Image: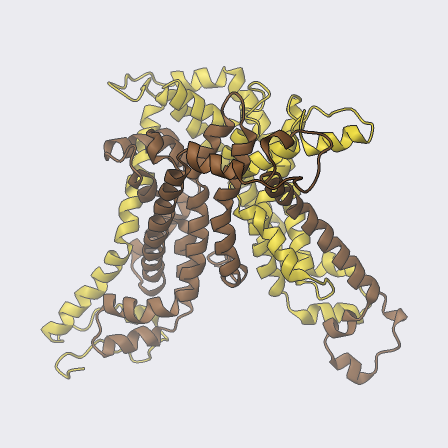
Length: 322
Length: 295
């Protein structure tokens, strides 16, 4: 380093993070002024790409989408202003209510299932008692690697009504074939199972990290006090991993509300249109019927619901912590 | 386990860890192991059944009694999938998208995370909140207007139309922000004193120590893009540009599903990710995905 260009050396490096980016005194030389400018510009350069993308693919679509939701835009030509007409039509559409109802039902099935499974797995994988954890872990992970489309194909293959493995086993044991696909509720249950199967591994990762952070001394103390394994789980493990539980349930609910690909390949939202979930509704009205304005209105209702769900869970979480 | 069943612990026994003392309990070992393997088999079985079925001749797929193992092993489904559906093309397209998005995502996220961790400007804090907000605005919510943006940028029906919007990821930015927060400021300061400029410091000093995070995000990003469905579905129109997922769904959506081809095609599409996971398992398992949620 050259003595003519003294950098801004804070008195106590590392104690005051702000000192790192504080411009040097004006009395300093030209070189250091140039360097100070660089400190201000460097972060701009670093975040530049993401800032541009953020405006292009989040801010701009959100703003234009909100505008289009008040128009009867079809994607081409002009966008005539129709005020709240789209929203009125939406709240008068039985198909929209049905889509929302089925989506909520799906989330109510899939989220707890996923939670219990991923926590059980994480507990077993961090348990000192279980044997063969390495191979088991690989088996748990493969479903997460499989795309929703292929997962749908796999479960359709197993729960096919006329050819599926499950019905084959049931009928060979003397039962009668179960209408996995033609019964709306059953086919939604299969989607929930397939969704939980594919989503477990990621949540398991979150739980494993959380479980490893629980101090062993807690468990040792509880053992000496004669706590049963269940008591230890209930009074030490669960409270310790509460923040992770919150995240898993939050992300899970938001994800379930946006389910699309898995459903498309598993049963196409069938039988008929009975299991069309919200995103399918948006996709159908927007892209297949060209009602961009109307689909945008549906999107904003979905966004409001997602935000409400998130807010509700944050509030419940706060109250529990208080 | 009840402590009363043990001989009274003597002082040295107490000093040993709980884990050691309990590791010898046969009942708990059997219980935990059985439960673990019951679940593992439940998770693995659908995949196994599916993969084994893909080697059966088309005529045997539905012939009773069903057998676990193919009576005669055949690759016919695979050959048909590879040749009749331009699968080689889908495969290449998917690879191009996944690789280029992954490289760009890792770089952009590393730079953003670094800036968020190591510089204190009010607008950086604001941008951090903006990135947080993007998690509430997923692709599915702004589907139609995002499509219009792609169209107006001239990216419709181009692979770039899938790559560019996918570069920004909140998860990636959080992971790097979390990591770089743990890097001591002295390191950055020392580089500055040595006259290294900010960009050089980042490339020469910071990126190399962030390698584990880079690999982890790369695996996740590759998996996300390889399995993407809804976005490519909207952006692509020309069958020669299709990705694997759209190709597979087009077989599923047909009037008469050709199961033989569908099974082969699906298995082909899974293989690269499974290989990638087995190679980089360490990074996936040690990924602290709680990063960014702790503060």
